[in-house]
Length: 520
Image (cartoon, helix red, strand yellow):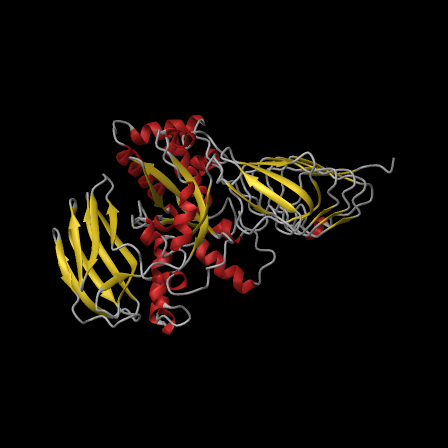
């Protein structure tokens, strides 16, 4: 789902590393990072008091729904559990030195005393065994306030995540929608259904079903490092394909988990955003204004509550090599540290940009100097006005695009619909004369677009990675098509005005067929 053509090699490597973290790689990266820590962990650019959390407890769920809660009061960390054993808390400073520690096989209290300095960020590691599964929760940020009392430190994106999670509704209609086949999560595919039935046979609760499916994902699937590096092949991220291959990147893992859950009657959805180190999301402004997705995971609803799961970061297996068909599979035990995470902790390493729900996130606003938009619950965005269409950064909570009858938009602005990957059909108004760079980049489910007579130019990478596009008719009025405008669209038949050159030699993946219309 991600295009790297406009990035430098250094940034590409960084993006791939974040997107490519499996559990062993993540652990190694964290160890290396911490060993070479600079004072970035200490609050400097940001005022730590602005990030004192408005919550004083974090509750973890076991695979069967049991609870273990960490609470702060005064200088104490209290652990209350109805399922946990073998528990330990290590509170560490920026160089991983333990400043306070405690343990217990049932509920217990850790007294930190004066071991923590005021307004310095510490990270707690919490180890717990619940329902036979050992979890290691790291990156739990906390500090001691000037008055001596402990408080959690929230991620710089926590409030943003709370707002974005507001689209995860729990009314009956919305939950039923999250059981339907959608996008690359076709929950009605016969093999998806058969696999879900096999995995959940004899299981009664959604807790049991969701865990059985997650365990299957992190144990049987492998993270596809070949795909991360391969720019000459278009990979399938649909669950119907991956359930057979069992090798995928983050989006495919999210799609398959979601499809299996839905087939088993457990509401779920794919979620997109930014995966990062806690040092980048806690007391750092690196991603505060960023909605450039580099990662995908899933959310699952159990007993009316949505939980975040990241099978990529828990997957122990890896597929490496030089090509799609000749890679090497290596296996390793999975972890379960990113399963059913509470938002308070999940936000320390994930910024949530969007969830692929069938319903839309209702909102209205300006989308240009003379244009407005409205998104309704059914996932429709209606665009009105004139001039250049410039949707706000991160505005992608819609499935259907409609231009009002009196709309006279003449330009689809740069990256306007970029990464709106659940829209399927777009009919541009006849007044459009220009499609800017990246306008529809990575619209992965876009199957059809109408380009009007009168259109004059199509920008750089305008339809790059629209890998479901089947047919595009470029009108005779078009005189300029930018580099890579239709790259990575392997299914597409494109009809061009006579003599127009796409410079296919520079394409990574050419269209299926290019038709050069005769001068007549």
